[in-house]
Image (cartoon, rainbow, N blue to C red):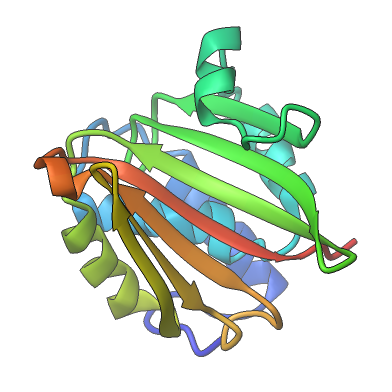
Length: 184
């Protein structure tokens, strides 16, 4: 990963950035803040959903209610999933979720940030300003949903970034996900 600005690939920077971003008390900030929250939770913790879970405990995020969890969890009801509602901090409010699944006999860890009422194209622009999200490898528009997938191997080997939204229906908001092989 070749991060720009205040993002550096070191343990100290990850801890510093995560603490600074996650401990602020702003609510409903602009699209760049959502991009930075996604980077802090998901991109900087590639393959380490245990670190995301630890941050959720430390910052006392609200565990999702059962119906919220069903709404945000992977399609496979047996897949590992945990999620929270983040009410405070940069980019808040948003849903944060982590999941694990198997693809090609390899465990993939996924971290997602789901938001409403924000322009996902603008968030993508801000995301690109901070990290190299890679090459678009797939795009699907069906049933009112738009799904895009990038090869984010420049960030972590085997990593993928996906953005799902309902732009086809004229709706704002969506889900930003970062998946990569589990690192433990």
